[in-house]
Every structure is written in structure tokens, then in C-alpha cells.
Image (cartoon, one colour):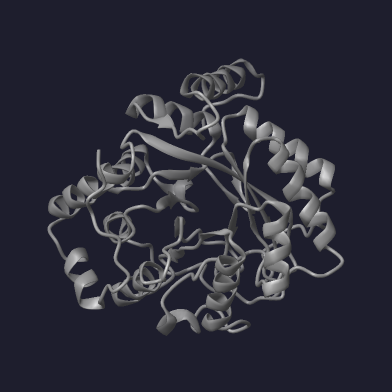
Length: 347
């Protein structure tokens, strides 16, 4: 279908509030209409996320179990060896992922670690996977090095609105994040940037986040919308739960505002029912992280994702180089293997 919805960069907070305040059915209908103009409504892009360096992060993000400021019982790990990362990437591709994302708990990558990181990018790229990394802040030089190595996407979330930001993070500024995203864009890489809902923010803060993302001169190609995973030992462990309908509304408005972006249903999925996930797909989410862990927090077990896809008639989105049948067969084969395994169980 020919794309007709405008991609705008001049959204006002009043306009976004009007969308969020629409009757629920009207909002989802509008989001689904926009979604179908840009994407196949029955395809979801599938990514795998691997923590290549865990814990002891100097940042004080109040939601994060990897922060060195909090005692969450997380086992700290050094940077993984390149060969181990490549083996994980091979497993992800065999299980049906088309993008392999690598995350390190750093304020920014050090000079001594860059050669290993660049080698990971090159080797994963050689497998035929799209590549994504999240390594903290990037200056112009490191962004160019990653781009030259073939990195497709760089993830750096804004997390929340500028106004609420200092309630969540004090060790880097909002402008630091925007500067990193600009360095990524200037290097020629694609941007993966979104935020976290359920940290105690108001609707106005969610509006502010969406405006920041949509009003970039080029909108992020990938927009992860996370639902807070409350971790014992972090300052947000006892924050009030987010209303699931508010989460779905935010997904729908993100789809309307950023019609050509992949909106990723990210952290927090393990707490979502199948029915809630189905509703987020209808609202315009068309990307997920696939696998049993997102960095250090749980994710729905792989077989559950596959079974839900089958029940909904959803197929994994294909890279141009692969046939639909091949990718679907890989996913279904993975499900069968898990069912045959002695370690398979119903959660």
C-alpha cells in the first residue's frame, strides 16, 4: 500500500496530548491505519540482545541493576571474548533473529576496548546479521570507527522527558544523550532510541519523550518502548505499576508520530499477558527482542514468543536477502527442538 501518512518533525505537546486523550478504540484504529501504510501488519522484526560486558557501570540510572551505585546482587562480568560473542550471534541467527544487538555497561567505550568491539561488529556482520550496539556515550571519532566497521544501528535511549530526566539520572545530562545521537547520525549509522515507561513519570513526561524523538531532523529508525522492570536494590523497586492501557496508548501514539520507524516492544514483556502483547502489535509495535534475557532482566521464553506468533498469524519480518519460508522454518524448527529437549518446561 502506498504510504500516505506524513512524517512530521514539528509535533507540539498539545497535539500529542490530544492523541493520547482520544477514545481508546479511535486511537488504535488511527494507529493501525498508519501502520498499514508503511508496514506489513502481520510481520514483526526479531532481534536478539546480548550483554557483552555486565555490571559495575559508573552511571546512576535509578532503574538499572547494572549501576555500580546500587546493590542488586548482579554478578559483574568483564568484556566477553570475541569468539564467544560470535557463537552467540550464530545461535541467534539459527533461532530466527535478523538483528544482533550487543550491550556493554559503560559510561563510554575505552580506547583499549575499541579494537575488540570493532572486531565483534565485523564478525557478526559477516554472518549476514544486522548489527546494533549500545556502549554508552560516543564522541565523533568512536562513532566513525563503529560506522567504518559496518555497525548498522547504535542504541542510546533518551529514557524520558528532559524535565523528568534528572529525577532518574544525574551522572550524564540529557544534552549528552542528544550529542551522542547526533554523532551517530553524522557517522552514517542508524539510530535506535526510545525510553522507559512506568518510572513514576506523568503523561506530560511521556509526551515530552515522544516529541523529542519524533521531532529529530531524522526520526530514529528503531524506537524501543520499555516498561520498567522493577529490580530489588534499585531506587525504583517500589514505584507504582503503570496502567497497561497507558502503555498501549503510548505505543499507538509513537506509531502515529513516527510512522516509518520500527516501534520495539522491549523490556517488560515478561510481565505482559499474551492478550496485552497482541494489543500492542495492533497498536503498531512491530519489533521485539527475542530470547530469554534482555541484558540482565528476564524476557518471555523463546517458545512462548513462537507460540504467540503462530496464534496471531504473525511472521518474522525478513531481511531482503532471505526468503520468508526459510526464516519461518528456522523459527518453527527452534520451537520443535525446545519441545524435544529435556530442559523444556511450561512456565
